[in-house]
Length: 249
Image: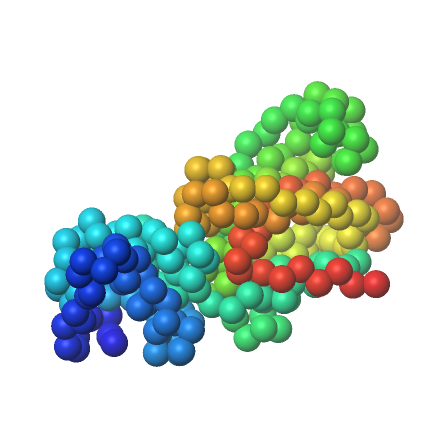
């Protein structure tokens, strides 16, 4: 099946107690599991699927929503619906680098800067950065992608004035590691990582192209420079369907 949905019309079983949208969802799920729809492949449009199954687009939309809730597909605004790729193994250790992890998996890594603001440090973040509550810090909201698929979104805080201008460097380079190099930090290490999970809020699901309520893995972490000074406090939200965290010894 190609993105146009070309091929014979699929006849649905009528009057047998199984809703049309469920039959469509099950048929597409079977195509995905059998490899007839490969990972990363774009599904036919709603109109093409409606024509193939002889139903209206609302019925197709409900079937696609059910597949998204199962983590089998993702809907991207303005681009269409795609088969989810296999989970990426994501090691958590002393040197955790998103761009390196994604590149080693043979995929292209990039980070998008959504917003950057100077804000007063809240008590919890101030403690992680070893600054006083109310001190100015740079707060970045970012999305991190592998081959264009969003894997995580993050709130990252850096102490000021040390990292004045960091947002522009990150926006140009698409990588925290490369941006740190512009500030003379050739290496940094992970001081701590805390992990838990919860359902995605509506805005988080939208940023990650997830169905609302899908599970997120939350990583709260602190990175330090070679002298042991905190340079970054981050809360990262990973799509649980797209990554497998590997905690290194």
